[in-house]
Image 1 (spheres, rainbow, N blue to C red):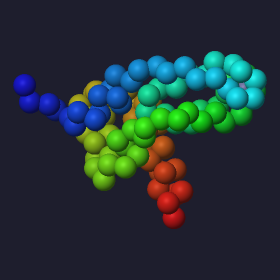
Image 2: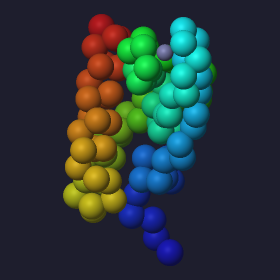
Image 3: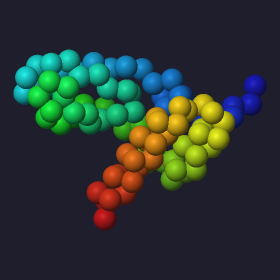
Image 4: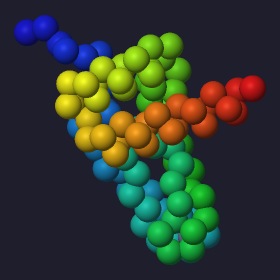
Length: 95
Ligand SMILES: [Zn+2]
């Protein structure tokens, strides 16, 4: 069976939920596996997760890949928006 998208995109299409704990207040913070940073729902602090970065963080085709997944309907539009926002922030940090 031919894949319609890159295998790395599995974590974007069917992300696992990973629970981490806020270092400030100890609240549970749920991450999608492609996320490395999220706001604590209790205290609003940014919680970082030690994680291997999702392929979208280093793949040169990431923007294209997300656009493709969006076209295929493999990603809900709000998740595609979020990933594109993450990409933009990542490129801002590099400069
Ligand atoms: Zn907290």
